[in-house]
Image (cartoon, rainbow, N blue to C red; front, side):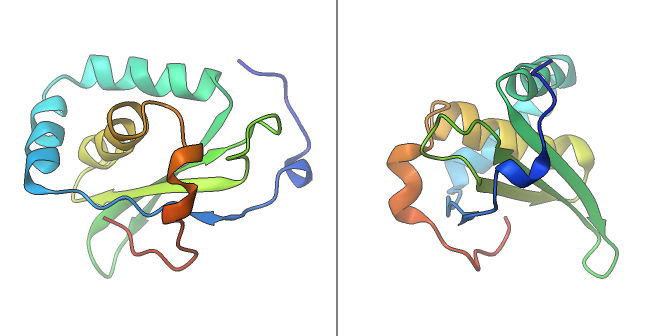
Length: 121
C-alpha cells in the first residue's frame, strides 16, 4: 500500500468526462463476469495511489463509484473518474475499464475532456 498522506495535500480538481459507447458497455458487462480479475485490478489501482470511492444512490437505485488520482507527481492529481451501475461489481468494472482500457492508466491526455459537473455513467 502507498504511504499514508494528509488528504489536504491533494485537492479535488474536477471530473474527467469519459462516455461509454455500446461496445464499451458490452465489454464491461463481460468483464464483470470475472470478479476475481476485477478485484485484482482494483488492488493494483489502489497500490498505484488512486483513491476509490463507493456510494449507493437510493433514489436512482445505482452504485456510484469514483477514482481520484492522489499522486502529486502526476499532472492528473486531484482529477476523478466516475462510474455508475445497478450493482457494485458492474460499477467497479466501469471504473476499471475507464482507467485501464480507455485511458491506459494515463489520465493526462484526457484532461481536455474534463467536466466539473460531469454526470455519472
